[in-house]
Amino acid sequence: MKNYYNEIVELIEEMEAKRYAREVKNKNDAIKTYREIGRLLVEAQGSELKDNKGNILIKKLSKKLTKEYGENYNTDNLKSMREFYYSKYYIEYEKLE
Image (cartoon, rainbow, N blue to C red):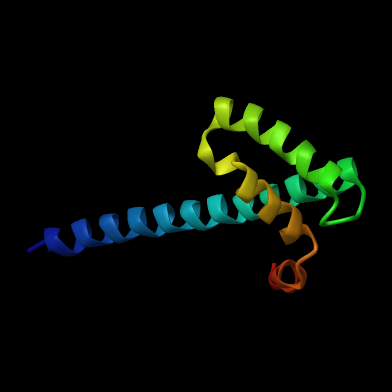
């Protein structure tokens, strides 16, 4: 007699594995995107993290970005992305890929 339960479990596990792989890819893409945003912010304002001109730039960009794309692009998050660009942790992350 055919074991339908095992076949159903296999289908579910295959689907769950694909879902997990997509989630990991999405998170990796987000990490890369946030670091690239950080790079662009550094490039736009120069290399000074504490530069007041840079903070004004971030506030202006944040206002536009949060209006169009939501709170993920608020001032604090953009500052974090800028700092992430300098992060040694990302360099370690890249080595894992």
